[in-house]
Length: 501
Image (cartoon, rainbow, N blue to C red; front, side, top):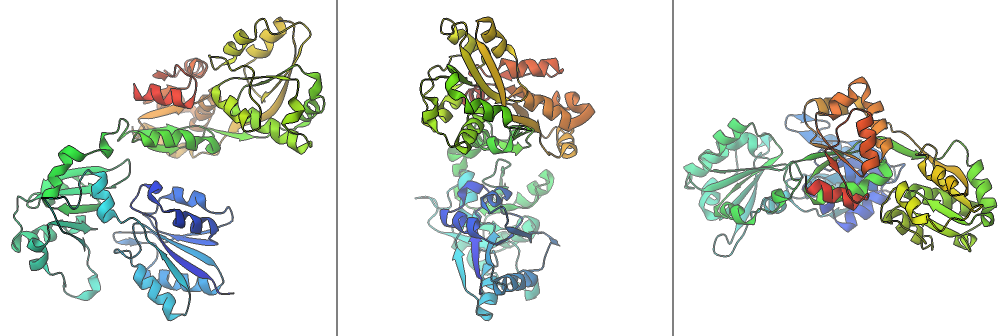
């Protein structure tokens, strides 16, 4: 069976700039052959059984020669594979996609090109520099800063480029800046022409150096700027002073460690990234089934015997309704049972199963629901609480004091996630993490377990943000100073608190 190759542009760096069509093909691919500049998070769209082949190339350090990449695509397609060749930027803008496509044509193999947003226009845009602007620049050129070394001599028409185009965008040109700027000046571009060097454009690590053509090489050397970066020449650079937007975000330049369970981290990460932060997802916990569902299943079998059902988390809701469905039931099984939820997110998840919580306390912790239930619990009432295997005991204890018959059943458990503690410890020790977020007590204790004996010392080297007082209390109990404590115990509340820090 003949395969198919999709030459897909991954965009400039911000992984959310990928196209809808590109994501569709990534989801369908049997094999993904990907580059260094294609964000790893794009691979999360792929099937669990996808074959991943890394062929990244940095300056003077190639994982695989281009000729071998071309042949690899041919071999995979001949084997009947649906292949995505995931390339940074656009495949046909200095991406060598044309060479790959010609090799496929030579072998009578089908291919499709999915354009990507090129760094030539997107990186300047994220730096607040339009490549064209009425009254300033009516033309721009995209130029390689690294010509094919096998050509023998340059074919660049410097005499035309230097003064014939308003805005010049050099890709991959940082290492050749002395030569590039020398040629521009030699061919008539004034040395005082505004210029910019933009490294890791469109990503939270973005760096922007404003300089001039004559000073650029010296400034780059002095600041130690390395690839990947673009070099931009033209009067449009001066517009950055007014139009800079990306690096004006409140958390721009900050690196935040997100310790939520992997399946839940994305919501928090997305909100932090929207504020300009660079997020490291290093889950401290993993949500897994309890050792046995026997207690939960037994409680579901006698559901009609309970007067109240209390959910303390989104996880409890999901595991409860999964087991209810497996038993052949649905939301109708809760007819006649009052339902309480700690927190709006838990209540919202209940709604997805067709259940509107009767009580959602204003304070999103056990104490809040205890207060809300006062006067509503009569002696002898039966209450079911499906929750984590290990959790605070205050809720069942206080409800028992009210005369209720409380049954707590494990619906799930949190365990320490498989996170690289050594790498994390090194980053904390080097001061490369600006903030750690804790969204539950278990994220605190499990991160300490991951980091080992130096955990408290390393965590206290940076700032910490806690979702509420219970989590903050766990920090203090373990010798960690919480710097930010959300007043509203939700992800949005945590984000608001971080913005104000």
